[in-house]
Length: 299
Image 1 (cartoon, helix red, strand yellow):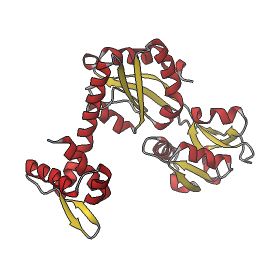
Image 2: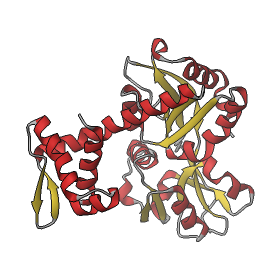
Image 3: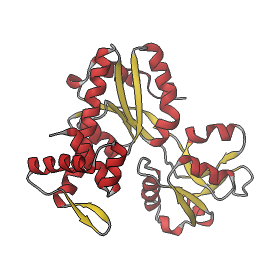
Image 4: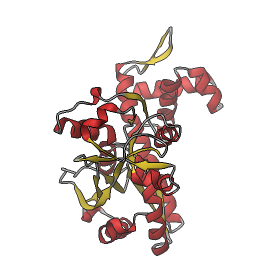
């Protein structure tokens, strides 16, 4: 399969326009259409059809689009490995939750880099499920998840926990210690993003104590930690956030922690890789570093 034609096809589906892709790619519309025609001839299906909304994928085109992203990522990984081989460098891809990627992992990887200066690291924020799927499909080398894997194709180790705290603006009138049922009395900002598990975990924990999330006065949902922190800074409500994300503001006394009796949201952290027999030397080194050093190296 011509991978350049596959890239053209994906771009046409995303933009819904052959002319736009042709302009961006600096090729003629005729040449671009011919590339896609070759894909259709190879697969034996029509992939695109014109509509009043632009160019749309057919049912066969939707299937190709769904799988082509993985195919192109595999190609990109192969190119990176070949480049690393050429320059005698080891490139290690890491997936993890958004809070770990943004706050904790860079600090630890700085220490790993000092020990293994020839290793390069690339981090991506992904959900638990996406991280492990990438690992199984050889699209990443290590991942950090907050659920114990249950796939016998993977190795994993519990290396620590991520502390989740309820924070408020330091000027807020909310008490420093509340009962879990008091959550129903206070306006909340909910951090809700697919690369995080906080919102789903809150729902699960509330159910354990006979409460539901719809009873809490949620002012609005945000999909990023900076947006949640901005809300707290403006005293717009309370919010459950990773401790590592608000450590600086707590130290500066801009925020305060609100203790919730009998409501523990801390996540276990697992490092996950493919089976030892499938790990190369560099991935084995880094995997063992995390297993041996665990939580104590997180900043």
